[in-house]
Amino acid sequence: MKKHIIFWGLILGAVALLGLILLKSYGAQLDSERMNQGVDALFMATSMPADTPPAQWPDIIRQFVAAHVQIDPAKPLNDNSGAWVDTIGGMLMHAHKKSEIRPAVNPATAAQLMGLMLQRAGVEARIVELFRYAPGFPSVAMVETKDMASGQWVLHDPARDVYWANPQKRERAGLEAIVRDRAQNFMPCNMTTCDWALVSQTGVTPQDMMTYFVLGVAYDPVDPVMFVNNEQFSLTAPVTGVDGAALSFCQARANLCALRKVDY
Image (tube, rainbow, N blue to C red; front, side):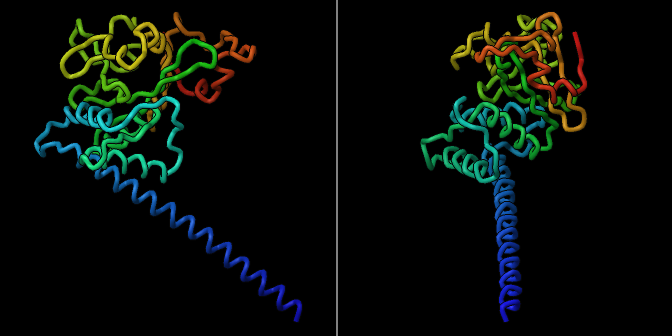
């Protein structure tokens, strides 16, 4: 009798555990579905006319993200679908004038939001991460989109609502071009002007922003690649951090140094 009780106790325990696992899995699936629906709703909320040329979509989506989030570098990254659902819900409430409060997001989350909406629009895009040669190797996240006509990559920063261009050549630019050439040859631009003041308005000096365009990683899903300006950034030179320990970039970010590298 005792053995039967133990046996059925084990069976019931296993069934309960399986039920919890299935419930969690179902909950995650629901969150994922809600997130996808939310991205669809965000795309619709841009109110783009049906005849809008696809070349204009990245600018429209970048402006939409910038208008409906509040950038807060202290906010953690959205690391689960529930957090994404909350963020997207807040954006939709603000976009439809149901709330005056914009959801606070990390700059990297803003880049991911733009990437998700571009993916929904069918625009080829990838997240990029730029690094400074400084203790701790801080980074900023942006988005690159591929121009459908020219095939060239163009760099966008939804946290500051700018794209990057060479104003003298009147050409938009991608990460590789800016890292390869002098950052001073490029400027942040909006739809009316190109001016370093566009970055300064967000509390970042032009000098600080320029120091980021020396090493960048493009997280292309097919071929992630690192672009390095060797004259301004050393992957192996040690940098002393706030804790007194000296680490090189490749010691601190070995996973990135394992990627394909393009040196200049």
